[in-house]
Image 1 (tube, rainbow, N blue to C red):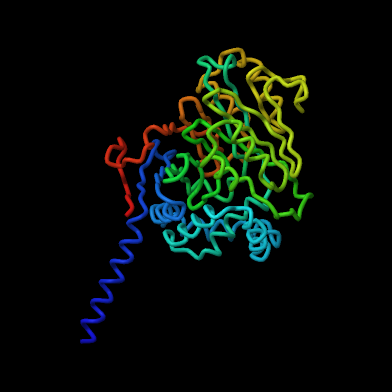
Image 2 (image 1 turned 180 degrees about the vertical axis):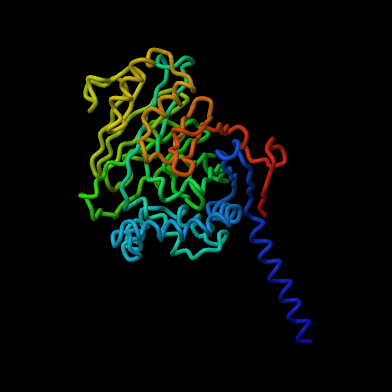
Length: 388
């Protein structure tokens, strides 16, 4: 009798697990040619379901990457990135995150099989750390076809070997807009991205270490970007969401809309916000401004200006945009680059390889139309893993 009861209980538990996991859907393919290939993970559902699918499909990489990155960052930064400081950062920001991000993190915990507290700490590292990047957008008369092109260079150390754990996620939420998040294994924050409406986001970090310790009572841009990509259909809506957010630290943002097409540059030094359109005489880089172009490349501004001056009269296509991305990469610290054609909903992505910076590696094309709408039965790529 006892054996029979245990058997029925075991079957009941297995059915419950299967039923829970059946809610989540996703699959994984690889784009590019080795050694410059990367996984593309396509997930759909509620935030928790998408987190669950992502965690399950990238489980081996996440289980290796997350604890390793946390340990490396803490060794490099010492007490600044202590468990106590990272936990306090999460606690300070959580009231501003909204339930979707927290629910997705809980799903990621279940799928990846890692402690939730560990994953939270890993996601707080970018909030406390400093980094240098570039963002440029051009459209209309500056391009050959009138499309909006936009670049984002992530200038961050390659010694942490985040490039060994590449992951591009295509989110197709049940309630919200499909969007692409070029990132790393297990990171559900977004440092750059594009949605199905052609909204593109770029960030440049401006906060020096001397500004620390930072006030974390607000929303980190990587969480804000996910919110924007999930819901903003127009440039005005994206800009308004940034205006309405309680932001932290100092950043520059470039926000584009491939439908108009147009883009703006923002100096988002919380709580202040300054917005410039193209060719604006009040731009911080005036008088070196251009029609149908906004840009910010920090110390690489002179290089960008020279390139924009040469190509900005209708000569930009994706090849020239990638050339520009390569030219403003930071020597010794260029981790990942993305060049978008926001009008065509396409992205070209390069990752560093070993100690070789991303600007020296091939850029691999990702087309949103290959993955949206969600239909793994009709994908033209070989599915390597599927969930459930």
